Image (cartoon, rainbow, N blue to C red; front, side):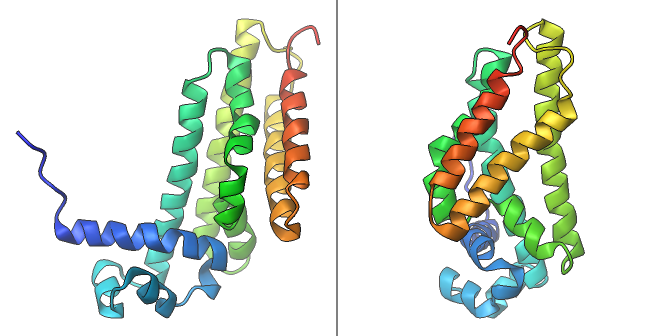
Length: 203
């Protein structure tokens, strides 16, 4: 028996989210207009408002979509890694794999939203903070696991190390995006990889 296709309304809603996601990431909440969304989707303003309450609602779903893409990618990278250290290395190595696409997409959605929404959009800021917290928690869990396995130095400060890794990667993306020079990010990735390798017990 074939699976039933999603209702047309659900397909339209998903189309709006997927089309709006890169626009909001590049132009931000304030910079994105309803005309941007109608032009990109080919839908009328009424069609968009028939699926979402307002632009704010579209923006929040678009951010969730962008974050979902990021977390899904890194979850697959981590799950394909054999050891705990390799799972930690999946973050810088994963960024190295997709950095051109990330820069073309407008940069990291977490960073972009954090900067824009910091003083202007409480709900989006909260969502960005939550995404960062989830990322940090995942790294902390991997480091803690590595310590328990006896492969990571037990004196390592897991939360501090997680924050450093995130700051290196996010900072590299931001500087490469604004300058157009990939070297900022590639050097940050190299440093992040050295940081992870340096966690190994006996280094």
